[in-house]
Image 1 (cartoon, rainbow over the protein chains, first blue to last red):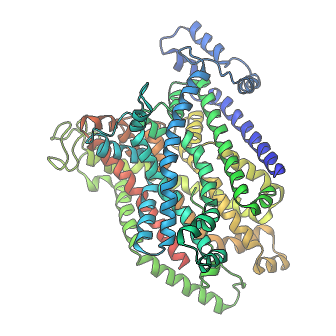
Image 2 (tube, one colour):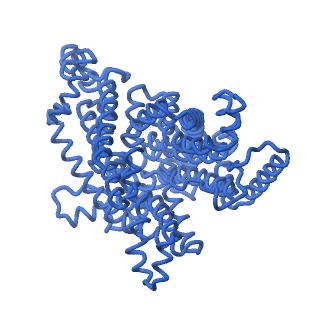
Length: 316
Length: 310
C-alpha cells in the first residue's frame, strides 16, 4: 500500500515537471508580443520593456523555469496586471469553483448511482432503456450547449432560476439558488456517464455468486444492495468520480462563461485572452494539483473498498 | 473518457470476429468469418439508431459540402426580413442582431467543425492505433515511457490542455486539428494497447513468431486485422468527442478567424447574451445544431458497437 502511494506521488511529480515546462514555454512561444497585449497598443517602448522585465521574458528560458519552480515552491505567483496578488485572485476563484463542484456532487452522485442501480435491477425493461438512452444523449452534448438551453428554457421564463450564477455577499441559500442552473447543466452532462458505469458495475455484482447466496438466504432486496452489491458495484464509479472531480474543477471553462461564474475555469480563459501569464500559471497549476489529488484519493478509496485491488494496484 | 464497457464479448457471444482463438487459416474459417461480417452488416443497416444517426450526419455533411444547395442567402448577407426577426415568421429560423439569416448561418456553420473534427480524429486514430499496437505487443520500457508521457497529457482537463496548446502555437486550423488529435491519442492508445496485449497471447501470434516473422509483420498483418472492429468503434466515439471539443474551443473564441464567421460554437458565443432579452433563436439554433451532430455521431457509434457484439 505504502509502495503504491509513493509510486503514485513520484509519477505525479513527473507529470508536474512536464506541466511546469509547458507553462514556462507558453509566453515565449505564443504568437504576438505578450507585453503589447498587456500594456496596450499605444504603450511606449519603455513601458513595453518594463512589462517584459516584470514578466521575466528578458531572462533565459532556464532562469524562467527556475522562477516558475520558485513560484510553486513559495506559492507566490506574483501580481496580476491590475496589481493584485495572483494567490489572492486564485483563492477566490478556487473557492467559487469549490462551491459549484460541491453542490454538483451533492446533486449528481446520489441521482446517478440510484439511476444506474435502478437500470441494472430492471435490466432490459423500459426503465433501463430510458435511463441509459436519455443519459447517453445528454452526455454527448457539450456543457455550454446544455447551459444555453437551460438559460433559454428555464432561466428566462422562470423567475426562480437565476441567469447569473454568482450571488456575491448573499446568504448560502440564495447562492445555492443562483447555482441551480449550472448544476443542472453539469447533471445533464454527467448523469448518463456515471449512471452507465454504475449500471455496468451493478450488473456484474448482481450476477456474482455472493449476491445469489444473499438472496437465497432470504435477505430483502434493499439489504442485499446495501451490504453486498453496493460495495462491489461502485468501485468503477468511484474511480471515474476521482477523474471527473478534476475535470469539474478546471474543465467547466465554457459553462462558467455561460453563467458568468468567476470560477477557476473562467479565470484561466480570461488570463489567456488578456495574456495574464502569472495568473495563467497559477490557475493551471492549481487545477493540475487538484486533479492529481482527486485521482490519487479515488485510487486509495478503491483500495480501501476492495482489498484485492491493493496488491494489484501496487505493480500496475 | 468512456472506455469503461470494454467489449468483453468473448464469453457472451461465441460468434464474434475479433476472438480468433483458433488461427484463421482454414478456408472454412474464412467463409464463416465472411458470413459473420455479412450478418453484422445486416444488423447494423437495419438498426433504427444507425439509420437516424446517418440521416442527421448525412444532412450536415451535405450542408458542409454544398451549402448553396440548401440556402439561397450567404452567411453574411442582409436578408429582406431585417434584423432580429422572429423565427417561423418571415424567415425559417429568424435573423440575428446583424440582420443575417440564422438558418443560412447554420448551413454554412457546418463546414468548420466537419473539416476539423474528422481530420483530428483521423490523426488520433492513426497515431493511437500505432502506439497502442507497439506498446501492447512489445511491452517493456517503450511501453513504460510512452505510458508516462501519455498520462502527463491527461494531467489537466482536455479542454484546458487544448486551450494551452492552441495559445502556444497559434490558433490556425492545422494547429487546432493537431491539438485535438494529440489529446485523443492517450484514450485510443489505452484501448488498443489492452486489446493488443490480449491478442499477443493467442496461438496465432505464437505460431507467427515460430514461423520467424518479424515483429512489424506480426503487428501489422496478424494483430491489426483482429483489432480493426475495436478501431472502428473508437473512431466513431472519438469523432463525437472531437466535435464536442472543437465546438467548445470555438465557443471560447480560441479557433482563430473572424468572430463573425459562420461557425456553430462561435455563433452561440456571439449571441447567447441576448437570451436574457428574450432573443433566444440566434444562439439556441446553433447550439441545437451542435447537439444534433454529436448525438447523430453517437447513435452511429453505438449501433456499430452493438452490431459488432451481436
